[in-house]
Length: 633
Image (cartoon, rainbow, N blue to C red):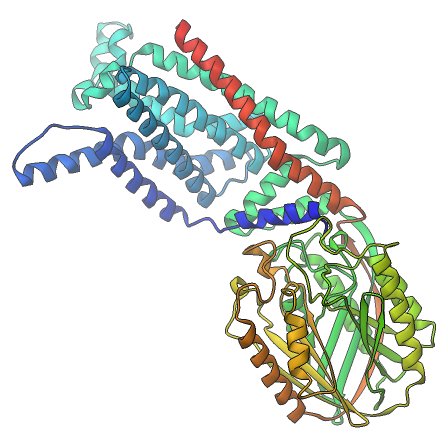
């Protein structure tokens, strides 16, 4: 992961699930009631029962004048939008209405404070109300355009519901109709009782006049134009370089954070490129033929976040494996994120084909440890194939790029190995600090360190004497959750025993490790086994909490070390004679593609940084025009 990609990953802090529509609606009515108590003054009384009645009346007026438009918008926006071909759901509609109500309440509260501290009167509050109603119309317009991918004119219909409902209530209960000539005497006799109800409204509303509604229409038109200009300016770089719209990304992101929808995958699929990836399977089975453990390693990256794409790949592998599943991290970066979860099935089908081709043997080598520069590699051969686990610990490293992993595996095979399962241990990083976050790229010194270590390891394994293989496994889902940096697979351990030498492979379902934690675990395991290595799956389930929610960032290190030690002891006790075999298949999948992740991250970060400044400039310009119109009106 590069620094730019880490900034994009940081957007995961905004991920949440929208509450059910009735929860948002209930909270909106509560806010409206509280605003009514603060805004309206129905009089004073000394009797306590009378005071309770007055407070209740003020709360009701808040619900009526602030809450009712929110209810109408909550219920009506999704229906109208879907009628016009949109995709807004009731949950999103209610959440949007609630947010707009909060904007309205904050604006009115600020205006009320200003009137207390300055000579400005009640008219100023309603001038602010006009601007606030226009603002929430503009905000709703942007969201509806993003979610439903509608044109400006079509999106304006559902977007205007909350503003229009508030305007209608103000028109009827402010007595504005008294300034207008509405039909003849007969028509007025029938309409006036419904259009003029000022006698039932708080006296504060009587300052509202026709000019407020004229200004509301004018400012809403100005703000809608500002939204259109903002979208076009922001969207242009996306369309030029990626061939997609920023609104598609915004729609997918909103759908993911609000309801966990797969709309973000539709956007990624537009960006995707076809790629052929090796899928390697290492299987261990008991002498009775039943599978004891299975390592599955496709050269893809389990991202980009949450369950989007291949983010939950490790758990999907475990659900499809007969023996205890070990899905470690491959040598691939974010350019090899799967664009949709459907691509995971293609990978798993290839893994099944590879598993069906395996020929098993009782022979294996003791493990060997080699070092080249910063790269350390633990390797072990099973018949004519090898498992290699690479780490840069105690140095900091994140993902190893696809080309580096292919080259390293090819270098290892030059010694005569038929298949190589090359794991990026992904077990020591300093979070999202630093300029490049330890990304191992082609041509870097670290890439040559890994390639040379793989070649040295392959040559040593080709000459080490073989012996009969014994293997034990253990696992624990752990008491920790993704919030703590541990995914649903918990911790899994494989222990091999060949010619009296024992080797422990520890796999933690997490995304990298805090600095020094891997070394603490390896040192602790020296009391139990001859060699050991610690790996993480790089699951992105944990990144719906924080972008760098690494193993050890939350949980106590002593507790983790103790649990791993117990599991290694359990696996040693479980050791029994097994046979092993490895095979590789290729899968054709759609991934993000070369440099597409970096381009996407750059554009998304530009929207976050420059988009905020542009939005502020557009808002200030629109408000300046609005204020000028207010002075001229």
